[in-house]
Image (cartoon, rainbow, N blue to C red; front, side, top):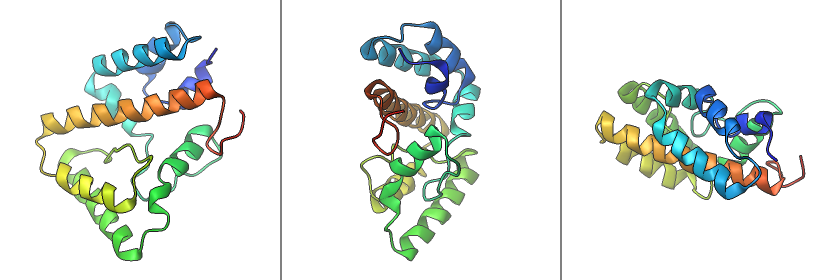
Length: 161
């Protein structure tokens, strides 16, 4: 069974954590479904609380926590990017935060720096309501991947807890 401390590494929203921890945690399918439902029902302030725990794309999460390790691994597609591309991500992050008031969130797993920059630039054209829907969907993907990792019993390095 997945514990509350482990769940907290998946999503930093306290409301999400309380609701998911109160539901079934022994079955990955039920856990994921509960998570998806709760994420859809969160108030925007709760989503912002979750966003605050995510580093900007291209910035390395510090620390030795499970969440920081996952973040570093998830963003590994930026690691080998050339300096100009990294600078464009920094500028894109700044423009995004000025426009929307929160960090640019994207499921970075499986994406390289250029793909994330293209998505960032495209999403800068969204209106606030559309972008909130996209952010919720991206957050749900990230949380779902992390829940699957927990159920598999591996940390960011592919080793046991």
